Structure formats: structure tokens, C-alpha cells
Image 1 (tube, rainbow, N blue to C red):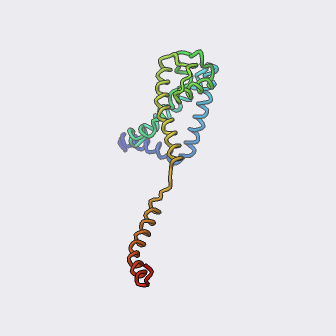
Image 2: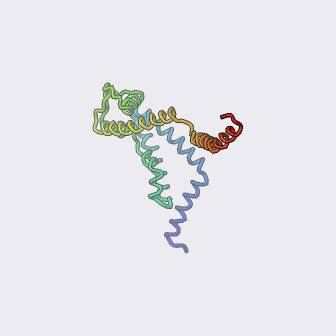
Image 3: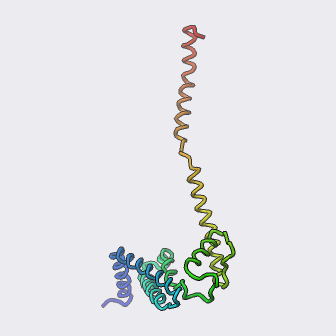
Length: 195
């Protein structure tokens, strides 16, 4: 008879092996569920029915919890799959404590996020709840980094020059060989009386 710890380890290994064996199907199903989650979340935000969002969020939570339990190294799994933990939270609509009178639909929210991320801040839409203000601060922080990174990459691409160091070294070597031949050429020229 196997020890209880060995049975638990076999179950953990079996779950990991199953997911690894069916990786593409598993990831495809999770991606389809994520699209459904986003769609249902947006519809729930418009209509006010949050039960489907909570159900799909619970599915993500169970999947994440089982895979975390089955992981050979839980800290490593958390480090590599932190976004999976975040996806378990029903972020759209269900966790709002207050409603911004200037944000009527997803387009308005997207406009506010873009203006906030780029730190333009026209002021026509401002956060009214403490949670919204925290989110705005995080968006500004991320926006400064992303816009700075993107502009740095564009600038580096525009200013990039070819690596001509090998070409320069070849030219220097050619000039050195010509300089070494100069005394020989001068002696030869003097010997012919062309000086």
C-alpha cells in the first residue's frame, strides 16, 4: 500500500502531465474562455448582470488553484503565472463601488485609459472613486514607462547606423601597408632620377 503523500504526489504529477500532454488544446480552451470572459464582462457592465462574470472568474480561479497545487515548484509557478492569478478577478463592472458620471460605456473607459496612459489628461473625464484614482495613478506610472520605452525604441531605430568598424579597420590596414611601401617607392623613384 502506498503512503498518502505518494498518492498526493502522483495526483499532482498526473495533473501536470495531463496539461503538458494537451498543452495546445488546454491553452486554446483557456484563450476561448478568456475571450468569453471579456465579452460577458463587457455585456455585464452594460446590463448589470454579473453572475456569468463571477462563474467564469470562478472557473479561472479553480484552474489556477489546481495547477498551482500540482506545480512542482509553487513559488516558480506563481512567478511565471502571476497574470493567471489576476485573471481570476472579475475586474469589469462587478468590483466597482461607484460610478463615474462621465463614463457611459467601454469606449469612454478606453478613451480615459488612453488619455491617462499617455499622460495627456484633458480633464474631461476624471476618476471619482478612490479605486479609480489608484487605477489612474497606476496607469500614469505604466504609461510613462511604456511611452518612454516606445519612443526610445523608435529613436534607436531611426538613429541606428551600420557597424562600420570592420570597414574602418580594413582601410587603416590598407593605409599602413601603403605607408610601409612608401620608402621603397621613394628609393625606386630616386634611383630612376625622377625626384
